[in-house]
Image (cartoon, rainbow, N blue to C red; front, side, top):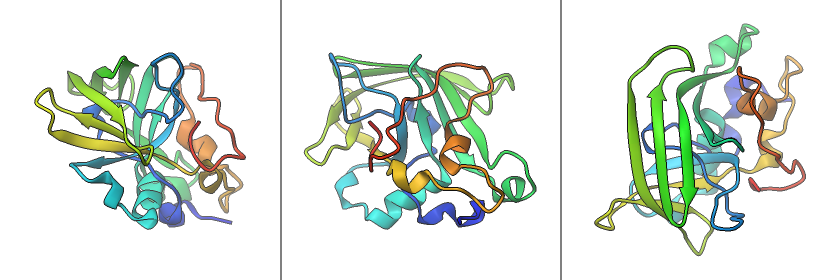
Length: 187
């Protein structure tokens, strides 16, 4: 069994709320499917080791939901070990991915807290290694979303709670991503 404080050995995800929602490899009709992702700032996402990706997924996952809602979360081991929510919101918003363009309206903190807000836009492309690369209008890469290994996140913690369920949970009764728990990537 896995403690929430030892989740750093799990798969990919992110915290960089500043750039919007996670994106999935399995695009349908130009749109990116919902899923759980790791975010890495800057260029060269292909140079990230599996351990780095797993750690980012476990510590700071980004979740993109079917209705366009995005959540950037961060592991809070103290709260998780004390019986509270092990993942807290770092940011959230509404994001659209279409025809190579991402557009997000984001707010820092949890829904209803009234944090800093702003809009983010970037171009995106899917690399040969299935990473979603975001770039500025001039072509400079901002960073990349890398799909998390769903099987690694789909574990039971010592307190009996499922880690993946704790990552994707929403307070607003909105739709959850349809995750294939037999798959090793978000799809």
